[in-house]
Length: 356
Image (cartoon, rainbow, N blue to C red):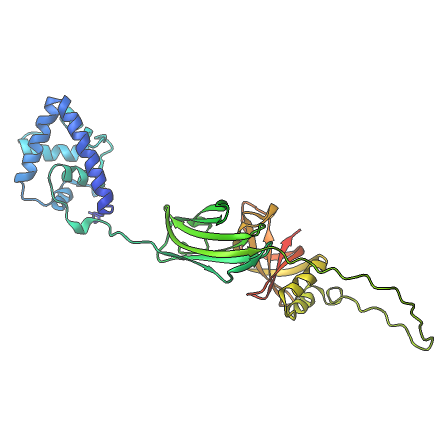
């Protein structure tokens, strides 16, 4: 017989209480049920068998269920003769089970406990406390800036909740329940956020309603652009002997996407990088997907979509936010299409784009 493994003791005890209340309710209105229950308790009390040994002897087909036929054999040992079917049905009603389908082993052990049998502590599943952490690279962000967040756990989880609240208004701007199937791993997940309203925010990581970790961050407004005062027109007199040089062609036009990324990387300030990005044209990239994360709080059409982490054939790395789709792209897939530049990730020194 397979080893008996019961739920955590607190969960098991609640099931025992439910069965005890059910037995009391049935035996109060059914004299025969009360007599059967009383005799069964006496037999168990006088028996020298442990609950595990008794169960192993009863479960003759090792399916971790006690069938009506198997229980009838036990009652036959108690009384000296095999009981009629209605007797078995009464006992099975104590645990709300059908004799043909049998009593699941958890309910059977709970029935024994409700009948006064002590259950060994080593049968209970050990309670594992779940802990988790939020990791964000920056605490100061700007409206519209796309940033990465990762969450991790000490054990595998079936799902987690990520809640983002604006602290001044107490308004919830994001509340996403993510199942394990949508996580990078059952104990780890990475995704991107984009907040479009200035404020002080609190991100909370929850598991089964219990808060595991929190992280505060500030989203500042976009800096105002300085207006350049108009310059007076001046007459330019060209020297006939001087050949007029054509204007320098933009790096983006000469060297393509890879060249533009290289130019942005030389920017000393994020504002300088964003200024270049704001003036950049759309590019057609030829790249490979290195990783995929989710875009939980992306703006507009990109909210709850996916973010592909790519390497262009020229060697430039970038992230591109994709619109929601049923099937996420896979690592190793090609990403060859047009993109619009959106933001600059200072921490990772990486451009963030949107698919067109």
